[in-house]
Image (cartoon, rainbow, N blue to C red; front, side, top):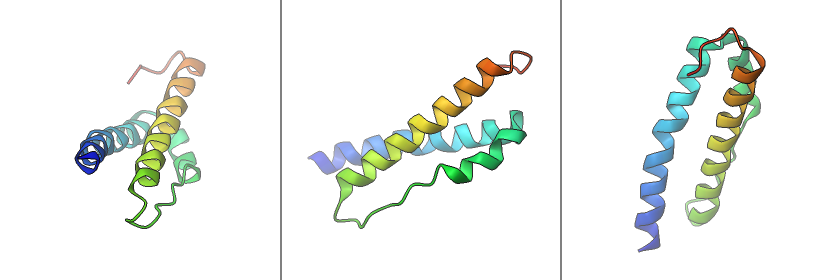
Length: 79
């Protein structure tokens, strides 16, 4: 049963990560180059819990990066 919860969590986060990256590219192109530094190493399929943790951490990092940047750049529109 836990695998289904993990799959739902992954299906929820992946589009949000893509949306965040597209927003960054569209609105904050100067910030987009730093996304490569937010690298996530995906472990083997055996360690599904670690994969979910990495995806969640990546999403949190991306979201924090966007929030901090928008706060520091008040002339930019909020995503």
